[in-house]
Amino acid sequence: MIASVTGSMTSAIGDHGIYAVFLLMAVDAVFPAFSELVMVYAGALASGAIEGASVTLFGHTISSPGWAFVAMALSGTIGYTVGAVVGWAIGIYGGRPLLERHGRWFHLGPERMERAERWFERWGDWAVFLGRLTPVVRSFCSIPAGVFRMPLGRYTLLTLAGSAIWCFALAGIGYAIGSSWHNFHDGFRYVDYAILALVLLLAVYALWRWWSSRSTKPATTDLD
Image (cartoon, rainbow, N blue to C red; front, top):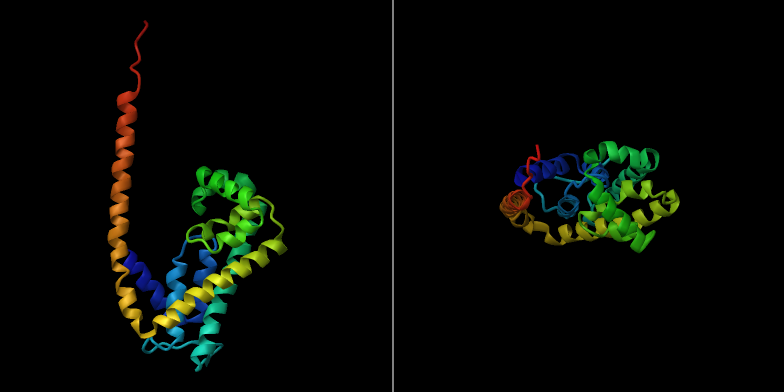
């Protein structure tokens, strides 16, 4: 499952380079899209470690690994920022009514919105910057920021700063991994096992909670 998804993503980046990174990171601003893997792989590709793949921009190959790294990291940063602005627009124009009707489309149910509201109440505008540096949370800041009417200029600046740190750091890891990328990627198959185990545990827990609630529910008596 995860291996097939990650394989498709790395193939897309290998085939389309900068453009695939831009698009995947734009999606990640609203829906979790394995941004960690995207940027690490982008960095490895920029280093020249991926056989048969190169970084091209407007039809021109970037031969310098250093500039290829900068191009990949900037592509991720700009793509994420564009996607984040789209998410902000969804939040500000759709507001709470949109999320109440279709929140499940964005994985933003009532509980997540409550957590997002507490996050913004605690950190204020810095919630966006910190959120962009926090795995998983980073994909659930965009729409709530619009719902909570955060000014676009400040929102965009903090998003750009946070996503730049995220993208350059992860691409740097990939660049440093270099030729060891394939060993790193092979390790992702263990994520499948971990997620399957987690799903099974959650299913057992949910079943136990359901059974407990039924067994402790007071019996009703017929007064007729």
